Length: 437
Ligand code: DLL
Image (cartoon, rainbow, N blue to C red; front, side, top):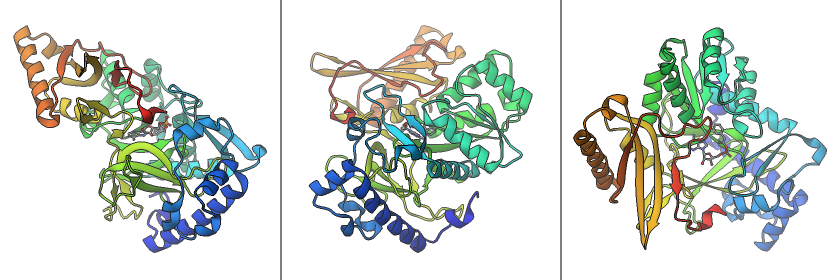
């Protein structure tokens, strides 16, 4: 454990720290950030109303839409000259959101990322090959700072260039790999093509995140690379990676709630949901200085696990992410997450972990087609067998989700690979989804 004192803090002490930090945060943003002051005034709340962590539910939410509206520096709670680094989201669906870090924020980031890597016992003898993208994306530098803090040797490989990735692994004896889970699988496939057995290169551990991935996909990664795979969660709006991470029990991600306070709400009504109930994750940055965020609606769907973990850490856990409610497809009235489809697909013999879901509307009816890659052996089977497999997959999905989908088996390697986040869904319906704003 990287910081046993913090990570095993008794709940009462944690609540006390959270309460003190929330109170100080609200006073700070009220005094310094017009955006928050105006919102609080509108809700008739003053800093004096916030005295303990439970009072957090009195505060208004912050949405992505609002954060974009104040691009680039509308959330700054310090003087601009205190900012030492800036990251942004990709901005593919609108203006990017900005995370502005003070020197202390960078220290905090290094600390929570050291905790994250500490979940897999990374230490100064390790060589961490960081294949998350470096740049405005938070993955690259976030992992980098954490690995430095631990004293491991970092190979700042960044994403892509698979040939070079394999060369680095061989030359420098990489023990830890970090990247998106979809890129990791691609790398395994690429290694195989090159005649390299990636499971024999001495890798021990991998940290994967930035996109949803199922337990089946984890097993596949572990098997193909011969490593233990950890799920790590984070988002630009909050700090980047380092918000929550899985321990060796692999039963939920410990939320670093001394710095980031989690709540689960009903996405429709905004009402708080009890532990164990699935809903939208809302996060408040309790200690960040540069661009603090209050009750940020992440759109990510999960639930809180309050039970004590066998690893000894006391911080509450969230279940692995089910997906985002803006990725949730409503197909003829049924809510479907890509992760549910993935989970089903990967249970079927011969199916590869590469798929794409194409949603369309024919007349008034939603249609869903799933393009599924199969392995070479299956693909060279006779047509009759392929048709049988298509039917099997369609009926598995129908049994589990109650919707009819068209399955199209496609050639091995025909679905585009990504070096970063995989694109799983193509929605051709042109629906205007409120949540996307
Ligand atoms: O993806 C930060 C990150 C980098 C996390 C490296 C983990 C590793 P954004 O680009 O702002 O930041 O995207 C954040 O990605 O709201 C989730 O929807 C999704 N996401 C991140 N981690 C996971 C995960 C980074 N472990 C958005 N499982 C989040 C599922 C994840 N979804």
